[in-house]
Length: 277
Length: 277
Image (tube, rainbow over all chains, first blue to last red; front, side, top):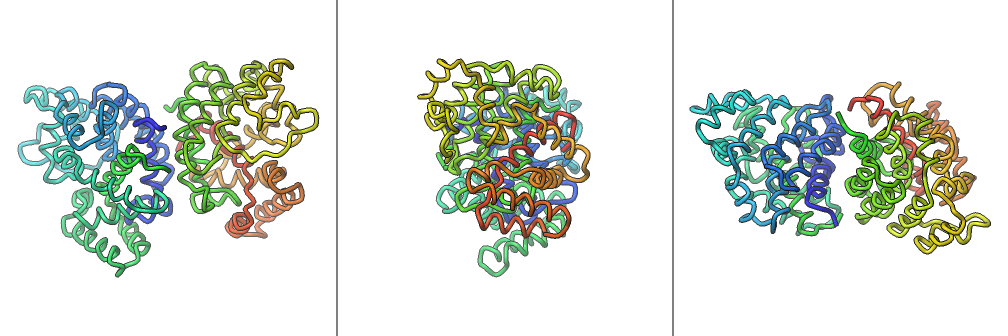
């Protein structure tokens, strides 16, 4: 029987194993500077932080530790968003039933210190993030630990910080919506057939077809994200070969990272639910 | 900085990531019942045992725990031999310099209790092993824990047990020869260029060309193992495409598992030596 911490690590590994996952690094495709082995090393390095949150350490500090360990490889950011979903889900599972309600409780219980840990996590990895939303300039995540006095002055918890980002960040949206898409993805994975990585690849395509990927919006624009959504729908209809779509998106360097994060969270929930590998 | 335990886990993951590794499961090839994801789950499950040996727990007990965790997936035996090499190497690295001499000291210090742990490990996984050598019937590993009274009566340490298998087991040979081929493989990986999984695949082919794989001898016969050695030499000379050789060996279900174990050990030593991923 794997522990929640082990299942979280396995979810990270299975996520990148599934192929094709159009635009993302997977078992069959990679970018010259962001390769499959960087995700392996990221999953190994993240483990200490995952273990911390599984044994009762604070969510923010655990997340920072997970990100610091994940970043100890040459590919840069591999699993930041996935860890931001897995850390509260591991806590939820380690302290009770892994349900949307219990996960929401973990979110509600986050503190200002957790928000500080979240900001410190940005110091370990270059996220290539753009300007913050209006009114949030002092809380620009690019400031890292320098933003902590402002967090403390405004008494903002990690839940508050992420709630401020829901408009443009699909991972933050999960935090404030009881991880609805993560649980939905888990259901798809559990109810599918065949090897788990194949189920993950299918769930990725379905999630990509259901909503524009916010990472693509950030790195490119809204129009590109919508095109990708349309292309994923076409692939699901059978009008486009998902392998061809994968080639095209990698060539264009369009990388739906948030959708991959959702799949990692969905895999974790499915594994905790008893999905056998 | 990764710990020895983390590098051991990463070595397991990178070993299976390298491709082509003719005959073995790798990133591009798998068997219907033994797939890439089983190696991912094996590496996750092995971690507790690796952590035990890294923190001073007995070698045999740690190995048993690593194997039990590794076997918690549906593919069967994925990394038994690799773990039998990694466990003493992790101990050597965690308690001093990772040198052939210090690794040999770890071997010399093994006890009868370590031998008992080794036998117990066989209860967690079906290895499909044949008859033991003459005079070793009472110590048939297929007896598992039932053989422990005999081990105790004869006062056999884990070193003694493996020394009795050097003729037909390449992993046992490493135990009694200061892990010479593991260190040699590490040197090849360190001195090569390019992504680490590509280096591992090349080192695999070189190790396969240098000596008949004992796992192939056990599962097939000496002649088959020699043919594979010749084929690997032809691939290194450029007379055969390694990808074609990989297709052929997988089709014939000829699986040079011991050579893969050596590559995992070599990757671990290289990572401990500072090889960046």
